[in-house]
Structure formats: C-alpha cells, structure tokens
Image 1: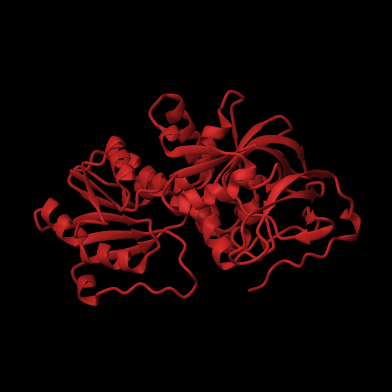
Image 2: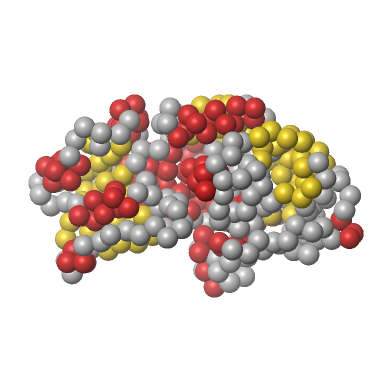
Length: 382
C-alpha cells in the first residue's frame, strides 16, 4: 500500500517546533514516548498545542497490525487543543482559538459538497494512510529521521500536532477540551449512526452490540428518540449498567446469555428492526443479521483486519433485511460537534461518565486498560 515518501522538500528542512509525543515503531510494538520535531505548517495546515487526546480502538488496531497506516509513526485522532500558528491560506481558525480535531476531507468532491465528508472520494488515503498531502506539508521527525504522521489529518498523540484545517472545529474559550476531545471520532460515530443513518422511531426495537465509547454514544443518541426497545449487548457488567443509565431499556450479558435467544424473547419473536454492531467481529455481525426482524437493518462499524469477511445467510436478505456499513457516523463534524458541545454544556450529554484520564507517559497503560475493558474511553491529558 503506497505511503507518501518521507523525503523532505528542500525549502522546509528546518526544525521549528519540538515536544514529546508517542510513536509506534512497528506492528505490535508499544507506544514509545520520544521527542518530536515538526516543521512549520504548510498550506492549509495548522500547528495545534494539544491539551488532550482521546484513545480510540482504531489506534489500537493500527498499533497491533502495523497497517494500513505505515509505521514508525504517530497515531491519535481525537485531539483537542489551542491553535499556535497557521499555514498559508488558513482562514477558519486563528492563533489562540480552541479547537477539537476530527477527520479530514477534500471539501470539493460530490460527497463533500452534499454534506457527507465522511464519504469523501479521498477519505481513506487522507485519513488512514496520511497519504494526501500538499507539496509543502510539514514533516515530523524523531532524532532527525522522518516518521509517518498526519493520521486522520492530525496525529494527535503528541504535545503538538500539524493538523489539516478541515480537521478542526472551533469551540468557545470556556470549553473543557479534556472532556470534549472524544467528540472527534468515537462520540460522533455512535451518535451519527443513530441520528444520521438508523433514525429510530417509537415503534422500533433497537439493539447495540458492544458498549464501548461508540456503542454507549449510540445508546444515548437512540434513547433521545424514544424507541419501543433499546437493547445493549456486551460482556462487561459495568458497561451494561452504564448503558441502562444512558437509556437502554434492556441489557444482555454476552458472556453468560444466549444473545439471539434473549433478543427473540425480548422482542416477542419479532427480532430487532434496527441494529448497530460496533465490535468488528464477523460472528457478532452474522448474529445481528440472524436476529434482525423481517425488513430490519443492521449497521456495521469497526476496524477489522484487511480481508475479513462477514458471513451472511442469503435467505434473510430475501426477507428485506439490509446490511450496511458506516464511516464516522456519516457526520459532518462542523455541524454535529457544535451541537454535541451545546448538549454537553446543557447537562444532557454525560461525556464524563465514559472517561478516565491518563498522562502521556501512561498511554500504553491506557491502551491495555481499554483492550481489557477496564476503561471505556481513555483521555490523554497533556
């Protein structure tokens, strides 16, 4: 898979900003804290001083398999911080602005023009490969050697980040950036899945498979639409309890209960009209399809290893069942993030309930805690 060459442009070889950051040197390697060197921001780029960064399962997936984002490199894609300098052509933010960082997009293709930047024609190379860069895009180095960066247009596991302007959402000076950081990926993915795609109504039986940050955000969002049933499925009792507090009407402990049988029992044999699978597990996705009602929809999100296949029983499709995927909740961060910031400020979005804070030096511990279900949403605070 092609990655942008790391050779530096002759006019941008000088180091301008230094600070600590975390790199992953190869597949399965731990996060390592090093001193990073960053160039001045290029056209359309912004230098951000990070205040906090959320940790997402996508970061852990890349760390584990070393792909598709090339390593050694800097991960992190739920950054929040303060603008320090802007590159040529940047107009939407200025030094001193507080910003949340989300994904990037081109802004010019048909999906972007239609308000669907998560389906940008160049979304994958821009965000997951960090491979679409301007000719003067800032380089990141360790001990003078270039390392891969620009993950989701930000690479935010660092005290400073060079971010795409289009990855930034400006928020007010009083916003608590450490609390709001996870809005950039996990929260908008879960909320967007419910509000932009599934759109549950009062007659729906909704199931959410996996009560991590994405799943719990989806449960909160679905509960605001008051479906007839809202079922949370997970293997961690504490997460199921939190799901109930966020609006789930029923919970299923997948470690001890027969999930399809329980769904059939809860829905009177009908099955779920809407289901959201956040687990990236083919077995769970197949079970969600099997438990879907006639005409039901299953929405899939989550990063599986390349080549992973999802077995689907074809007869069910003849009953009008639908299986769809979704990226980033089909959200426009410039629209959805400010709405969620306002809901949090009004006391309606309890982001704090999902979070536990760690220092940058504790990033690997945060990753281990997340992997083992100890923490729903780690937030690295600088």
